[in-house]
Length: 286
Image 1 (cartoon, rainbow, N blue to C red):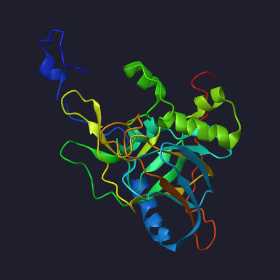
Image 2: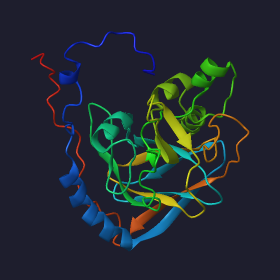
Image 3: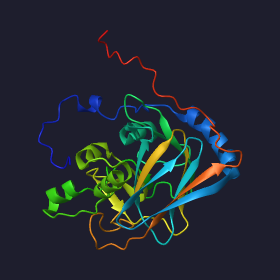
Image 4: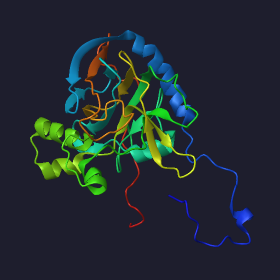
């Protein structure tokens, strides 16, 4: 938090500040091309499976490349923390940091969810968002962020001294262990930074601290994705409920979430390709 200023302002301070900004990555053309296809194809899908995520817990689900999946509020306003893996290779997983660098702090329709190095490909594209009307509010907040990492027992222990076992990190961890039969240490190294589905967040104007406010989601709201790879997903119904007060306790009102899997009427149809990076991986060593 840069509240106090201890250094002396240099004589050329004005020359160093308030320069023109430059967008780091330009993805608009790619996004628009994919979106046209998705908006048409999502009209042709039908339901094939559903998974209910209990409050303060997590479950795994599987989606084949070419299928769609939705995360939906089915009772009340509820935030969900989402991990995505390549179902055929757990070492390839969602990379929230690079996705944030490409698309910004919050995701919506047409944005793609990229995997980690050395793969760096789109795992899924958001094809519909019933909350895209929210935009950015007067505090600079929006929904579906790739800012927060996930609530976890380690940070809670650091700040409060309390042990709590139903943070999203722990929920995701237990679900992965149940699904894959791996040990705790291996699972903990695989759980990664999330897409905070339905969570309403931003950075304060003065200290730029991460903040949250009550999610605008209501019963029936959903976020829909098109799977570009075979996906093993894990979704945690956050113990913070709508995250209007807390995200790591048993005090908040919490509700279940639903994951539904949808398929194109013409069968599994790969609408566009998503290939792993063809970078040589020499890193200047050859």
